[in-house]
Length: 78
Image 1 (cartoon, one colour):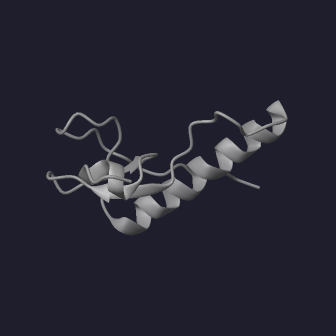
Image 2: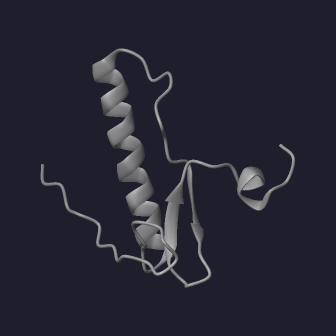
């Protein structure tokens, strides 16, 4: 099994990784979630594990992964 890397760019908005389109961001999200699941399984519990759960588009046009809910990101009361 070969693991292929997902191409990313550094974004001017200050986030570490930016992805060009939704398809690539979705692929990166899946890889990040799988990595967290494997780490949790090795540890024995997934409790307290930082886990990305969605991606969003920044004002510079790139997509980023985040663990924040949509409500928390937009400042609404959850």
